[in-house]
Each structure stands twice: as C-alpha cells, then as structure tokens.
Amino acid sequence: MTTTRAGGPDFTSPSLLRHLTRGVIGFGGLIGSVALIPITGPISLLLLPVGLVALRGCPMCWTIGLIQTLSRDRLRRTCEDGRCRLTVADRDHEERPAAPVTP
Image (cartoon, rainbow, N blue to C red; front, top):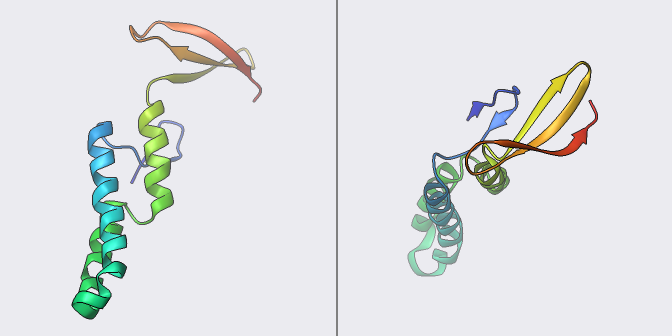
C-alpha cells in the first residue's frame, strides 16, 4: 500500500485488468479455501493466505482499490483563494468545471 498525493492510502493497481485479475485470484482463494475442506481437508486452508495476499489484506481493501483504479485521473480537486473546486478531466486531459467543493 502506498499513499496518494493527498496523503491517504492508495490501493490502486497499474491497470483495471490487473486489478480484476487480483480480485479473481483473491476471492477464488478465499472461497476455495473453505469450499474444498470436505474434499481435501484442512490442506485447502493453504489457499487462504494466497487469497488475502492477492486482495492486499481484505476484500474491502480490494473494493476501495477498484474504485480508486476506476476514478484515477478523472477527478481533480483544486483550491485557490480559499475556494475549492472539483474538476472532471476529459479524455484529452483538459479540465472542465464540475461541482464546487466546500473545504
């Protein structure tokens, strides 16, 4: 986990495909570790750490990372003269005004 420019935690992945792949591996490991107990016994619990590592600790961390990955570089907050604005970046990285944000 790294930190964003605003100082909060950053759970993003370099690409959406990589993040979704981590989710499939992570949730597959968690579900498989419990679902395979009747077949393989306690040995299936070895999939539990694989799932947790792929999800970077917890399913909620993965979900936050998914939202951060989807919204990366789409919203920008700028503050000038004591007034903050939230701007939405276009595909060609030009900014257009969105809704004002109160500090």
